[in-house]
Amino acid sequence: MPEETPARPAELALRPVTPALASYLAGSRLAGAGELAFSDGMPDTRLIPYAVLARAYRHAMVASVRHNQLGYGEPAGTPGLRKAIADMLRMERGLNVHPEQVCVVRGSQMGIYLAARLLAGPSSCVVFESLSYPPAREAFRSCGATVLSVAQDEHGLLPDALEALCRTYPVRAVYVTPHHQFPTTVMLPADRRLRLLALAEQYDFAIVEDDYDHEFHYLRSPVPPLASMDRNGRVLHIGSLSKVLAPGLRLGYVVAAERVVERCAAEILLIDRQGNQLTELAVGELMASGELHRHIRRALKIYQARRDFTAACLAERLGGRAQFDLPAGGIALWLRFAPWVDMERLVEDCAGQGLRISNGQIFTQDPEPVQALRLGFGHLTERELDSGIQRLAAALKRQEAG
Ligand SMILES: Cc1ncc(COP(=O)(O)O)c(C=O)c1O
Image (tube, rainbow, N blue to C red):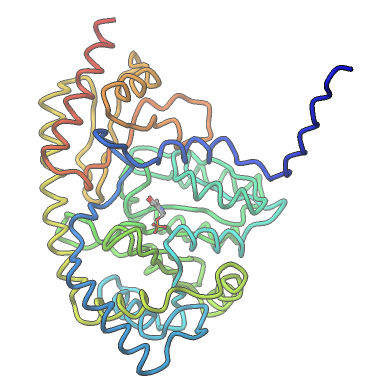
């Protein structure tokens, strides 16, 4: 009798991950031992003021015990942190908001997902720039939205192209990163911001403003967020403490009309009930005491020096093989390559040299080739940057030589 092979139990049927999300996930794997990764703009967690943070956590623990504060709390966040964020946005960013308009979330990614839950559904259309942040696009897509691409130029989103889309499709929301366009880093000019707000009014859509690294801007004159120009409650403004403090703390915020914040709180009840109160109390103290501000000023100087070092190093080592514009802010730059560069081969060749870079193609859902990559410089020291750029230059030279 032939032996019967036991039937394998059927695998659980799971909703598949979209190819765009899968390749983003693969690209954002942490660097292994001896490997360097140019990430797409990570902060340097070695700069975190650990002693100051530890003290704030200790205070938070003592206060929690004393005032019995570790029970179930407000899904929208602890009152102290909501107030500290509202104060900071009012004083430093020209946003006229009060604490009830602030919802604390676990990183801006959660804010984006909440925005998608509130705004998108099957048969809704949302618009992203042709080059944009893949997890944001996928968050909207996972809520059933059809994601449309709008053209952009060297200054960012093209309002005329957006208006053409609005005339054809029922656009519910537009996701933008106007402060430092992701991934190209450019700042959306004031006239386009005004036009975007006017179009939101005319075509009745919401604007999701992802202000993921507002603090790191190297120009003297501060540029307020788009939300500061919003008179009609069209903008859901999303900010993060990941870049200024630490991604691992998982803190961000959604700022919007009170009724939007109440809806966010209801969604939070379904996902994780509330945030980590210890972290919220500790970071609330760092904000109120000015410690966070001091850390940002220190980190800003370091990142500016790393940006300038990266620019000089790229110019010296790559010569004319790649172009970039010095970003006015942020912790990454957009490096553009000539059409003869085979981007996939470049990524593979660099990986062979222990350097991880991501093909700029991952930032779009459009078929046009993207001859560029986002080079994060903030998380690397000058030595590491130099070593990475040398490996990139060597890979490019090999390709040039055939
Ligand atoms: C454009 C953009 N939005 C959102 C995020 C998510 O950040 P977090 O959830 O850590 O605040 C990132 C992270 O790199 C980002 O680059």
